Image 1 (tube, rainbow, N blue to C red):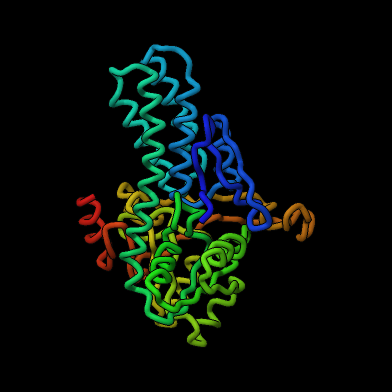
Image 2: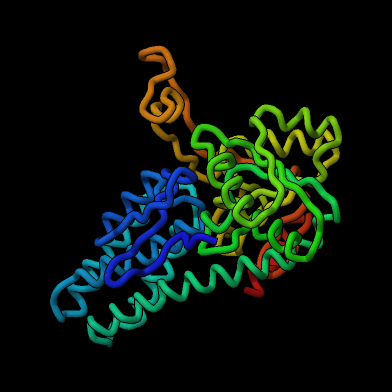
Length: 346
């Protein structure tokens, strides 16, 4: 598996996912503003990966603060945290990582600036390692839901490229494959960024897991023809009642799955669950630029001046979700009660 993001000497580098699968190219971040730009421009994407990038970006920002006065350092670091928090609005892992790094810095107010800086970098490295371990554990819990010989539909990319490594939805699929189950995957192309076509198919082919790409609007036909046994997606944020925000198009897949009596599973770490919000209606949905719809690459394919609506995510109500797979196990309805219990144990 290609590493998604890593420290490289005194910089943070991440695979430029805009260039995949044509070429593997590193995007180097020398400061926290480079990380913010990388998050906003989709160099790196996927909720867990964005959280890791945020942590590493904050460490970069902290390392650049000059002076030995801890109070001045904290004032500057808080401003850096505020900038990072605004990078993208929907993925809760970003705010989770900012809060974790900020809490660490605040707990070290009596330490020297250099000690705080060193601790923040170690914490960002720890978040990366923890994420990979969490994904593998999640895969172990989730693979029991994947029958032998199953065909799995997935939407967007929730693999190693969307995380620190191994993946959430694709982590479950990988675990089932490693268990020796003869499975195959149908990957929605996932417009407009084509993460299913460019990234999910690329990852699965690298791992020799059978995969076919289908047009987003073909999922219903394959379900009606009994050619899909289950759906597994990732999530960018999960409300405390189990409503799920994920890449645009997920909601219609969930509705189709329910209509065709197909289980719809969501794989996500506990850090993706936002206990501060009651329902998915409170989740901010990012609206992205018109050029993503009107252009293919740099070529305009729509009529000049056409109006475009381009939400990056949608909300799937909890009653369409068969189960949520986390590193602590499988959560089933009633989600509000079971999520609260699992979060209490974490």
